Length: 310
Length: 249
Ligand SMILES: Cc1cc2nc3c(=O)[nH]c(=O)nc-3n(C[C@H](O)[C@H](O)[C@H](O)COP(=O)(O)OP(=O)(O)OC[C@H]3O[C@@H](n4cnc5c(N)ncnc54)[C@H](O)[C@@H]3O)c2cc1C
Image (cartoon, rainbow over all chains, first blue to last red; front, top):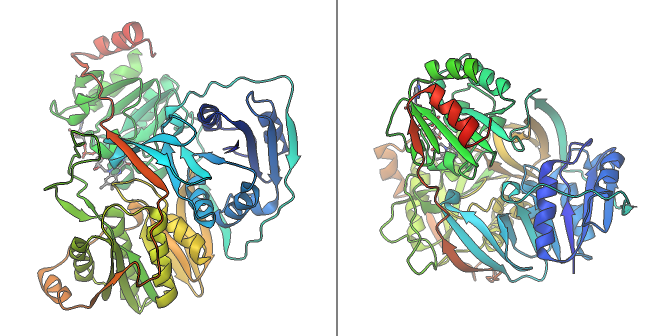
C-alpha cells in the first residue's frame, strides 16, 4: 500500500497546503511518494525530497504540465496510478480539475475536501456548505481524494538527507486544450490561503476605493485581504479574494470581518478560524453568532481608528 | 450547435439544513427544494448563447427523482427547448450521474455541455470533470466568462492569484462559476408555455447504465459549533482583547 501525494507549488516553492496534505497522508498510514509536476521544477522536487515522511519524489518536468491543464495532468496521474492505493491532492483550483478526471478514468469515485482521516478507507468531509459533516467509507480499491488543507496541521519536519528523486518520462499528449493567458493580481500581501491573519470586507465597505481602509489595517498587522461574495460581485476587489463555500476556505489565527453579514456560504469558508472578530453596524447580524469578539459600529469609524491604534 | 445543460434539484440555498436525530443523513422532509444555483447559471448561459444565435437548441437534463420535473419545467420556462429526466431514486454518486450524462451525450451529440461547478448539497465538485473524462472531451471548469469562437470555446476561470483563459476545441464540457452571469426570472407566460414543451423520461437501464457504489455514507453529524463570543464596546477594548486575551496581534 503506497500513497501518492501531489504537491502544490508555484514552480519555485512548495505551498503550505502540500505540508497539510502530507499530514493527512501520514494518517492513512502507508508509505508515501510525492509527485511534483510542472515545468522547470527541479528545485521544487529537490525541496520535496527533504520532507520527512516521504520515501520517493516523482518529478514530471515537461512543457505540457506547465499550466497543470486537466487533460494532460489526468493522463499523467492515470499513468502513475497502478503503483498506488491512494492518490491524494490538496484541494485547489488545479486538483479540482484533474482529480475527478483521474477518478472517472479509473472508474472509481472521489472523496472531495477530506477534513479528517479516520482510517485508510474512512474519512470525514463537509457537505451542505459545512452545515453537516459526513463520515464516508470508500468502497473502491483505489482511493482518489482531495484534502481540505485548513483542517490539517502544516508543520512538517525536514530531513537533511534527501530521498530519491525519480524523473517521470511519461509525457502526455494534449491536442484539445491550451493555455491562452493569465491575468494575475500582483500583491505584496500574504497569500489568503495560508495567511495567519486575514482582514475581510463585505458589501458594507461600499466601493473599491473604500477597500483601501481594509487594506490599510491589513498592512499594519501583516494580514491578507479577503472579501465576501457580495463585495467581489460588486467589483470592489478581484475574484480570488472571495472567502466562502464557493471561494477560498481559510482558517487563520485571526479573521476580521468588516461589513459582512455572515451568510452561511461565507461562514463555510472561515468559521474554523481560531479567533473571529466582527464589526457590523447591525447588532443582529448573524456574523455575531460566530464571532469571538463583536463590535457594533460603523466600519468607517472603526477601521481608521484601529489602523491608527493597533 | 446543440447545448446540453445539467439541472439538479437540491435544497434551497436559503434553508439551513438539520441533521437527523439518528445521524443517518440530513433531514429533507418538508424542506423547500430548488434548482441548484450553479445549474441556474448554466441554463442562463445556454439560453443567452441561443439568443445570440450561437446555439440552435438547448436541452436540459437531470438525473434524479420524479419531482425533478419541476426544475426541468423551470429551466424550460427560462428558455430551454426540451428536457430529459433520467429517473433514479436517492442520492446518486457523481460518477454514476456522469455515466448517465455520457450516455445522453453519445445519443444527442451536443456541441457543448454546460453544468454547474458544484451542487450545494453534496459539494463534490466532480461531475463535469468526470463527464469530460468519460466522453474524452476537453473541460473548462469554473467559467466566469465563456466565448464561443469558430470551433473553440474560450473559458476564463479563476486560479490562485487571478484569472486564466484557456481554449478548448469543441465539442467540450464547461462548468459554471457564480459570476458567469445573473440568471433571469421566469415570466408567467413562459411558465405556461414550458408546460407544453417536451419532457422525455428515461431510466438508467434505458441508457445502459448500471449503478455502481463507490462510497458508503456512514454517518452525518452537525459540525462543532463555536461558543458564542462577547461584544466589546470600543476599539480600545477590542485591541486589548486581541493583544492580551487572544494574543493574536
Ligand atoms: C450558491 C451560493 C454560493 C455562495 N458562495 C459564497 C461565498 O463563497 N462567499 C460569500 O461570502 N458569499 C457567498 N454567497 C453569497 C452569500 O449568500 C451572501 O449573499 C454574501 O456572503 C453576502 O455578503 P456580505 O455579507 O458582504 O453582504 P450583505 O449580506 O449585504 O451584508 C452587508 C453587511 O454590512 C453591514 N454594513 C453595511 N454598512 C456598514 C457600515 N458602514 N459599517 C458596518 N457594517 C456595515 C450590514 O449591516 C450588513 O450586515 C453564495 C451564495 C450562493 C447562493
